[in-house]
Image 1 (tube, rainbow over the protein chains, first blue to last red):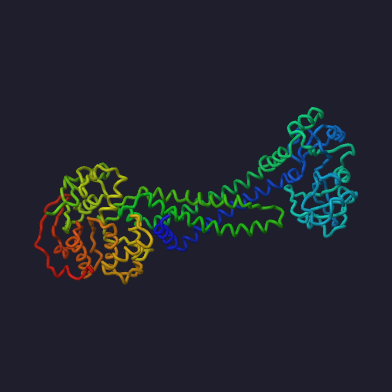
Image 2 (cartoon, each protein chain N blue to C red):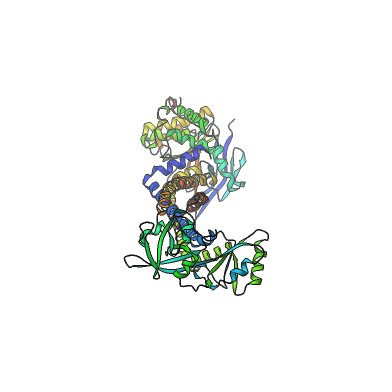
Length: 378
Length: 242
């Protein structure tokens, strides 16, 4: 880039400070909207499948045709023996994920999602523990909830006692940052307690989590399990995670809605920037004509216009990232996480550049058709 | 011996206006010669600005041929014309056409930037050109803070950035008072005489006719007379160029 060109572009931009402010505001608005909506999408996608992703299991055994984790159908726990006897299985455990009702002390009912696992094993337990120990869940009726949902569930401290479907539940620990996409907080407890909280018959389970011993690949292990079990599906953790995410993000339309909002942000950004850059170009049309008459090529004029767009993009992106950082930080304590991983931040920079340079195309088209003879008065 | 810097042969320019065709230029043959200041005069609509635009390679003739420094530019593709204008022709406009957001120095340096001269080299060269038109003190002034005469001198400095053999000006004194007009014409005259530029000027200002080496009169798209008047009073040529 040549210095003089940048200076002309910069001075054309700052010449009308109000218009520059409008341009930059448009870019900031668009970028923040895109970041928030896309961050929500990432947050939702991460949240919907977090139980599956953080289960530490290699394979999930579900009743046939279960589309996502929240609608698991119970089956006989005797299948666990078959699973454990299958060569290639290191260990396996019963697992429950089901909705139930939490009764606060003030009598209000809250929907919760009971997560029952075997506290003696590593599979399916809670993560990000900030108070309590997994071994605390070996005691009947002990439960863990997340700090985010203390107020929602009426919990103040460890030792508080509540009822889940008429059964006693004592808060024994807290996790941090384990959100539920369904807004029903996760309640981690032992498998045995979970059976009572969701009214599951003693000889039933909802899932079986499997950890392979590494002696065979997961496909081979899955094939072995499927050949010895009837009426079930055997899914890798990745598959079940994707199925769960896909259901919530696309089948329900929730993800599509936030992606559409992000797209809307992009469109708004393009329109606002295009309008203001076009207006700036029109203001300086005589100057572009003069440059053409003086021998400037169309490419030279394009660079001036594109540099104006790029300058707008860089300023707007920088301010938008600062604003987005506050939004993301604020969301950490809210029910809906907005994620902004650095690859997305970098991607947003390029998207902002693309948005602004696309917006400049209208002006480029105008300048391309500009007749340099306009500079002479006849 | 005087050579032709620009030579138009049987130039015509026709514009469509509805179903009718307007002939703005009708079979004009004219050359601008090295070291010569030619004034193109005539009433409004006589075709002088159209002729200037064609001579400056800004407008293409409907027919005829145009030679610039020995090259037939009518045969050139459109994309080659900016380079011809940039390298061989300096333009001066009635309304100065300076960039209001740039200082005098930056306006001149911008024209150098078009030619690939940037940074300190551009600033030094721009400062030298402003010095040559007597505007060293105004190098950091914006056009809004300069008089009409000063703006036109900046425009002349800008036109000289590529050291072009041809200078074309459209009503360069129309927006100036008589003193400023004389200063500008003195500059242009010296460019022709002392630096061997071919200078073509469209003007309505009959006060400036005395500067002409040639007076080309146009009417209805045609050249009706092409005269070499008596040499002007030398007093008018003094003191403008440092």
